[in-house]
Length: 396
Image 1 (cartoon, one colour):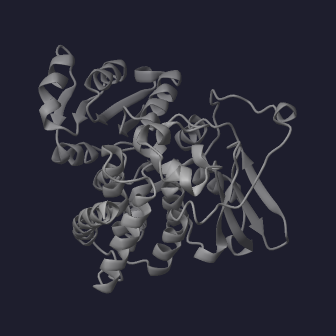
Image 2 (image 1 turned 180 degrees about the horizontal axis):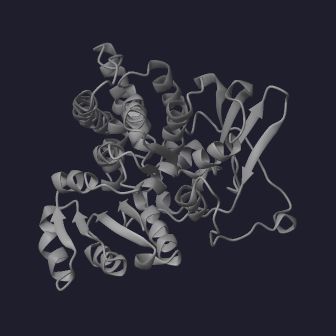
């Protein structure tokens, strides 16, 4: 029986993974080693009961009593906190879904790779903050790393059987989010409630806002560089409002191969779950006649500066990805709290990178986990200072 773990089980990716596992036979077909979540304790407990999980972990220690109460009478071991997340990742599993949002997903993902199984990576921040370290760890332990972002899964599939040296360009698509046609004046007044309303994808609060600001696409630019090893000038972003084409590969003979699919993360998750074979996935089948047209347009760098900042990070490399992500997370926290403007997020990230670059902190290679965590801490502190500076400037 194949063993699995789902890190970030109660988020949107985790829910889709759970759905596919249950449709595939649930506890009769899979042995569930670990499920982890945050504060949605009732849902985490429901999943643990349904899959007969060996261990259930909440990231928040104050939620442990509620988790224990919800799983009373079962054989599931309950635990809480960051150390418990790492310990859950130390439990061997054949297939692990890494879907914890943010830099918090890095440590469990690295620990899981040490078992030499398959890590289905939905936590793009792991590659952004510590790409070389993650790839080296997978190689060291003979583990398989599979992309679960829809764009990177599409690139992975389009490259199957192709020669990397024949690739001229890699194009990942962006929906443009809810503000694709907003003026600069309108964008200055965007609220968190508006930014959560994505036109195509059903996602959690943080990733929806990241998508609206194009910070999610900026992370995916860096992720493409780290996962596939293409040069920055080979990687492009195109706005595609329908979210049907997820990525395109341009070859040296002038041909372009595109991957199309519905806006449903179960496709990419299912591909990773069944790989190296293809298995049935319960997603809508495309009706091309009904679609009629697919539109594409260039992203506007003035309204979405996150893409430019991502290219700066790809040029710098070193620890710049860790700094970029940490600053983005701090800026996002403050935007959600209502004390930073939508466009102020990019300003905070740019200020943070500039300050750390002047200190020559970013060019250091990310060779150890401590290197990455130290930069994450430093960048969060620097970004918090940048938020205060922005607030003072906005009041002046």
